[in-house]
Amino acid sequence: MKQRTVNQYLKEKYGRKIYKISIDGGFTCPNRDGRLDTRGCIFCSAGGSGDFAEDRSLSIMEQIERGKRRVESKMPSDQTGGNKYIAYFQAFTNTYAPVEHLKSLYMEAVRHPDIVAISIGTRPDCLPEDVLNLLGEINSIKPVWVELGLQTIHEKTADYIRRGYPLPVYDKAVEELKRRDIEIITHVILGLPGESREDMLESVKYVGDSGVQGIKLQLLHVLKGTDLEKDYKAGLFKCMTMEEYINLIEDALDILPEDIIIHRMTGDGPKRILVAPEWSADKKRVLNELNKLTRN
Image (cartoon, rainbow, N blue to C red):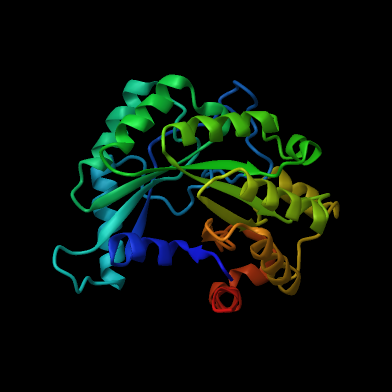
């Protein structure tokens, strides 16, 4: 593997291990509130991809403090000043609100002395100019990462998963974020129904060529209560085996630029709602196999 992992990147940047705290800012999504649809993306759980986030009933500051306690119970700091963190606005679409409200939430995180950066998960079609300008403003105070949910470049698949926007919207979002010197991380799901190995690698190559700074490669998980579960149980598609997935990740890494940061090579499906693939629940085994790729 020629690229750096996010842990390597952060250690180089900050000289220490940096932890991530998942935040729930109380957002919804245009795919759920009726602007585009009410069903959400076909793979998305009721938690809006924020199944591991803190409690949305708490303030941002309270969520950060709770997340710190969770980390420090497992990873006590041996450095002066304690552990440092990234506040990850993860659940649902985290730029989908009036800009004044967004500013109050983001700034609450930025003001916390142990937060070194904020990472904001969102949709490319939810970045109007006033929000982009706000992100640029905050980026001048502490680094801002924007995580874009692309998943695939193939329009047939995008329609199937109910993504709700065409590929040029992603291209425009990348252009506007780059213009403001904001770090971009793109999410790609591997194993979407109907896609061949070549289709998946085309999406990976497209992201690499788009000039973003980071990529998250996500194994498709079938979760309880989703429309994807219905199609899976109806036998309309199969999930990849672990061997197929590891081999695919190896090929994906080979075609990505050397300067792109690998933020993820798989992902977690909460065990209580995971339907398939069952092998992905053995997180330690999967990570051990994937980590072999990073040592080559």
